[in-house]
Structures are given as structure tokens and as C-alpha cells.
Amino acid sequence: MSINPEILNKLTTILGKEYVFIDEQTRNNYGHDETEDLVFPPHVVVKPANALEIAEVLKLANEYKIPTTPIGARTGLSGGALSIYGGIGLSLERLNKIIEIDEKNLQVVVEPAVITQVLKEAVADKGLFYPVDPSSMGSCFIGGNIAENSGGARAVKYGVTKDYVLNLEVVLPDGNIIWTGANTLKNSTGYNLTQLMVGSEGTLGVITKIVLKLLPKNNFNILMLVPFYNANEACEAVSAIFRAGIFPSALEFMERDAIDWTMKFVEGINVQVKDDINAHLLIEVDGNYPEILLQEAEKIMNVVEQFEIDDILFADTDEQKNMLWKMRRSVAEAVKGNSVYKEEDTVVPRFELPKLLEGIKIIGKKYGFKSVCYGHDGDGNLHVNIIKGDMSEDNWKTQVPLGIREIFELTVSLKGTLSGEHGIGLVQKNYMDIAFTKAHLEIMESIKRVFDPNNILNPGKIFPDDLI
Image (cartoon, rainbow, N blue to C red; front, side, top):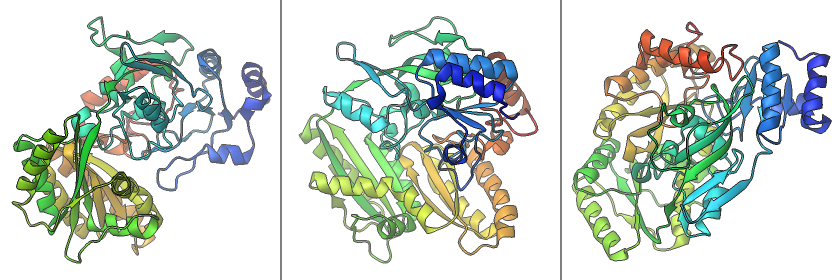
């Protein structure tokens, strides 16, 4: 529905005139994230300061049945923050405080618009460690990380966002404010509403405070870049490293094009790559005892040397380590700079990665598209970038969706699923039937109905069009 003057006046009363925006430039700015080139402007953008103001906005939206989309840093890749039905764009950017770093209990209390890297650096200054590190950590918000259950390079050893969330303050669609759990490491008291909220993509409630678990900071790491002549062998080496008893803190995969395009489109990256190298693994081990890390690095060398590889690059300085990590974290930006593209976020058990990569290439040839693959292979999470290149517009619209469906069917057949960390949002929702039966989806939809009977909160996300 449109936002009439009466509703605008009520929003202005709740928030103040300076935090209610109806101009086209602001609405367009808050109408996109990093998902392809999609833009869905809300009818009005509001910027509340706290949970009480959010509660009043949601009460109003619930009364008038106005679609309301929580909006964070707009770095998402699945369209989760797009206001596809217009309505209210609920920006959380003013809730940006680190409330408390509890050094005694190794916990931190934050608001949702704290930038992930800012949080990581703040706790590191206290000798503590928040491990979750998505590639966009320099700009993404903690609240968005929770909404999508984000991972990152170090998820292979340390886990993803859900493994660090202890408790959440949440505003429900009817305006009620609840805490979902307790600030304890163990909690077996009733249903786990905290974990239900993690990964719910803003469809069940609006998160306004977050209690996270922290770890002691490690002091040392070893980082190596391993070039492979064969990309499938690079994927095979991933499982072999773990079977040898090594648990890296990061194990990242990059196809040749991913590195070439990154060096072309991102300044400050200089890696020598021989013509016949087709993939790289970026491998890190970390800890507090350098002698143990050297032993682990030697074991990794023994494993990868069983495959066809070129000389391993060991990063000797912090500058070199930062350059290698910048290369890996800039791949998505480089792909976007090279071509129109679609990114899929597949995840399979580690041992199945070679089959997944091979199948993706076969499917690409069948439907006439090229793909560039990279990702967190240590936990089986392969990002598939489908490149438009010189494909016709008709084939891009008709053939690529068929190919994506086959990629997801292959992924599920390998005991994997549709998304490891980007979420389902808008662009993957009509593939959910591949991973779930109708009974599964109806259970999820019934949970949505309990929390949000009027379907005002981030409608049109997660569920297939023919379900809700």
C-alpha cells in the first residue's frame, strides 16, 4: 500500500521529521543492496534510534498492514534488504553502539548497526577475538550477519555467526519487545528462540541488541598460497588436509579467473601466476605456539605435495599477508567489475567439492554460460559466479535460471544445500523446493505466521511464490 499523509504524520510524530524520508534519492539509495542490479525503493525510509521507536513503527505498520523491510548496511547478496512491496524501509543505522565489552565473561553487547570489523578491532584491543569475518566485514553490520547467519574465511575452524550469539533483544511485528535467551553459555530452558532468529532474514522480528560470545585472541599465524595445475585437485586436497589431522583456521579456494580479475580490477595486489596454474588454495593456521604452527604447516605441505602443484608462497610479513587476504576478499568486487553476473552460494560436504566443481562446469557448457568459482572450501562453501559475458539477453533470462536449478539439484544430490552464508532472500526463494518438501516449507511458513500473522515484516522473502 502507499504511504498516505496520515501515516507520514504518525511516523513523524514517532521519529521526528529529520528521520523520515520520502525524497526519491534517499528511497532509491535504500532500495538496493549488492544483489545484482536490483532496485526496489521503499515508499518511505525511517531511521529509528532505539527499540522503543522501532516498536512504535511496527505497531503502526501492523495496524495498517504496511510492508516493512529492515535495512542494514545493504551489503547482502540475496536481496534480503530489498523493499519489493514498497512500504516502510526500516533503516537500523542509528543503532550503532558497542554497549559493553565484558572482559570477565568474554562477552560483548552491541547494537545491530555496529560494523563487523569495528567490533573485531574493539575486542582485539582487549585481547579478545570475535572470529566471524565475512568478506564485507569492513562495511557490513553485525545485525545483518545475524539475519543471514554469516560465515567467512575462518568459519572452518571457529564456526559461523550462530555459534557466538547468546541472547537477542528483538522487537516483534506487533511491537512487543522480548529477550530471546540468556547471557549464558548453556541454556536448556524452553524453545531456542535465539537460534530461530539467527538466519531468519528479518522475517520474524527486528533485532535491536545482541549478546555475543568472545574467545581469547591468538597471537600467531602462518599463511600460505598453494598453486594447483588442476582445479579439481585443489578441491580434492581440501578433504585430504583434514583427513591428515590438520584443522586450518582458514582454507580458501580461488579459480584462476578469480585471481586474474582481482589483480586487474583491484589495486595493490601482485601475485605471480604461471600460465598453466588453474586454481589456488589460501591456507592459514593460527594459535599461540609458533613451533606447533610450523609443524602443522609442514604437514599441510606434505599433503598438497601429493598433487600437481607449483611452488608454495609463504607470506613472510604482515604486509604480504594483508595483500593475500585483500586478494581473496576482493574477488566478488572484481567479478562485479568485470561483467553482469549472478552469484550462487552452494555448500556441500568437503569431500564432494570436486564433484560439485566439475558438475558446475558441465552445466555451464550445457546452458552456454561461464562461471568463476571461489569460496570457503574448508567448510564446503563454494561461491558460483555465473558470468553474462556475451550471452544474449534472452538466454540470460531463460537459460541461466534453468542452469541454476540444475546446479542446486546437483548440490542437494551431494547432500548439500542452497546457501551456506548469503541466505535465501528474494533471488533464491523459488529454488527452495529443491532442498525442502512441501511439508518442510509449510512448517516454516506456519512459524512465520505465528510471529507475523499480518505478513508485514520483510514479506516476499525465503518462501517460494506459490507458497506464501
